[in-house]
Image (cartoon, rainbow, N blue to C red):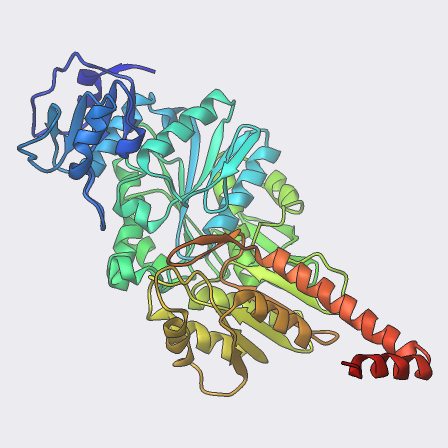
Amino acid sequence: MSQSLLKLLDATQIIESNADPHTRVESLCYDSRRAAPGALFFALRGSRTDGAHFVAQAVEKGAVATVSDAALPACASPLIRVPDARAAMADIAAAFYGNPADKLKVMGVTGTNGKTTTAFLVKHLLDADQRRCGLIGTVKYCIGESERDAPRTTPESLELQALLAEMLDAGNKAVAMEVSSHALAQHRTRGIEFDTAVFTNLTQDHLDFHKTMEQYFETKAALFESLAAQKKKRGRAIINIDDRYGHLLIERLRKKTPMITYGQRVGSDFRAADVRFDATGSVYRLEARGRSYLVRLPLIGSFNIYNSLAAISAAASMGMELRAAVAAIADAPQIPGRLERVPAKRNFQVFVDYAHTEDALRNVLRALRELKPNRLITVFGCGGDRDRAKRPLMAAASEEFSDWSILTSDNPRSEDPARILSDMRAGLSTHRHEEIPDRTEAIRKAVKLAAPGDIILIAGKGHEAYQEFADRKIPFDDCSVALRAIEERRVNIETEGSARDEPRHARNASHSQRREP
């Protein structure tokens, strides 16, 4: 793929440029290590590094020009100065890849919790409607029939536009995309016009980045504000009316943007009523468009009622027949790491969930309480180098709903695990807990404690297959660790049972032998 620099610069705002507009651009990059002959390099300023320091390296590898929002008087290449380098990168990336979003039905979902499940459910529904829906989100990226690991929830604009172009080439007609607050703040989705944008909820998270809940909300709201400014698509907002911030968003967008509301309160456009749960899933009556439908959902928890309402509303807004959506959601898949049941046949149950905020943890624990366990044992930690204020809140949530809590490590990153545990401990007021910093040992202890009828929740990492420390990242999967712990328990029980069943003289002989030097 090759484009003239002139055509690419026409897509964004330029302050000044000394680059030859007839230069051919063969690729785009913001990492100098990925520069190649004909590359256009974007010198981005990050929290730890400044791309301006790597211009010379990019030029050595063949970069033909640099885009920056700084003057860079000693720039080693032709310089294109722009008001905002990230915004320019998004504009240019969309132009370079031929604006692929214009040719796809695009659903974007944002909010603190529920993004992944909602995106998975929308993909499932649109696939059932023969739309061949791609997926971009926290767990994985799905392009055509292929899948790949997701390095981040919403990729940088360069990777995002490349993924959308790949989807078109692979035959996708639609895409379900998670849109993180970091992505919105950093213009990663700029240049994409959405057919549907979903708001799930807003609770405390990422305040290390956004500083205040007001800033966090304003960042999320930007996705919906942009719908009114779209030129090619008439985007529709789908908003959780039961959420406090959702209600604020509805008031702000009224008369600006077409909206659909969902929730459980009377007056919602898509309303769930008569909700019931059991160990196999949920059932509710959907009231929408003047009719009533019986929804059977193979996922548990009140929060999944909201996720399914959001997904059905989104699919319907994108043209899927409502009765077909209701029928298809009955076959919804298990979402990796979202109240995922560990497949072990024991007289107790183990679930793994990604819950890493106070609200998410409360929701998951409430859902498991509705299954009426004998005891609820919770293993959880808090990530290092992230919002410290939520740590005691998460501990308090676990204490409120759990019979026993085991505080452990999540992804400590560069922080001392002991400091993280200390922050968590501040939210506890009883002695119904213990601290085991080693996550493997914490999971083993929970499995060892489990009695018939108990439920164990392992929270915080969900689908993640690693654990991140200051100096290394190691393979770690909560489901696999739990399965090993369950098998170890089974072997130990069988071994102890065999020892009890053997003849007394044999046991005495065995003990006698062990006493020998």
